[in-house]
Amino acid sequence: MDLNFFKAASAGNSEPFKDMERDVIERLLTAKAKNTILHINIISSERENVSTKFVEEILEKCPALLLQVNAKGDTPLHLAAKFGHFEIVRVLIERAKLAQRGDEEPESGVEPFRQMIRMVNNEKNTALHEAVSQGNVDVVKILTREDPGYPYSANNYGKTPLYMAAEYENRSDMLRGLLENRTSASFDMVLALLENSTSVSHEGPNGKTALHAAAMRSFA
Image (cartoon, rainbow, N blue to C red; front, top):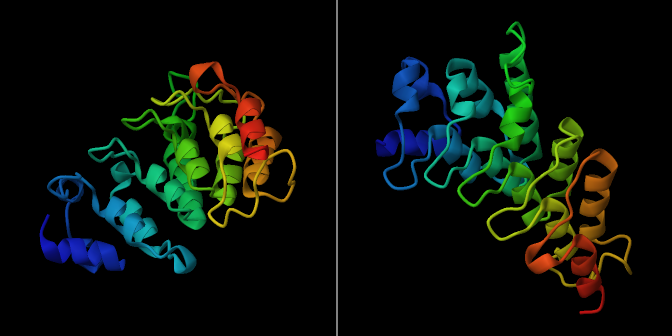
């Protein structure tokens, strides 16, 4: 990818891409990571001052980028969930819903926006795994609310989102456990998963469950 295009995507400047053909935009990738301009923008966005303008403008022109993965198998949704960009997550889901309207019922019976939410990367992480791993509670809530019936499987490390939520500990180390402190980040995530999801798996590695993880955090 040309350095000027990389800088434009990082800065959220869509002007250089307005006159490009869709297939040209799809082929704009970084050499090693294979990030698209959408991946680059999401990675570069500041969490506290995130703008959805670039994402909306690029997807209007090139909707295929919505599901395009990088070298790690990450979709834009994976990265937005990982970095806690709630507004971008919301826009990505809405764009996926727009792409569905007017189309025939999908053969799989699963709506395109839910297919996007369920996509796994090379580590078998969904966007929900990524959100939980970073303690992004608001993103956890919207993902589980949009797809409440999906039984999330374990990733390559044997962990489901619920197990990861139970073992999560926030950076300040002030809130030790799920069971003892009901205001902890881990409790908020577990609550979001249980409130919104009607079919959530709690398994973890080595035969452990989310309850084991919560108990270990409580008494650590």
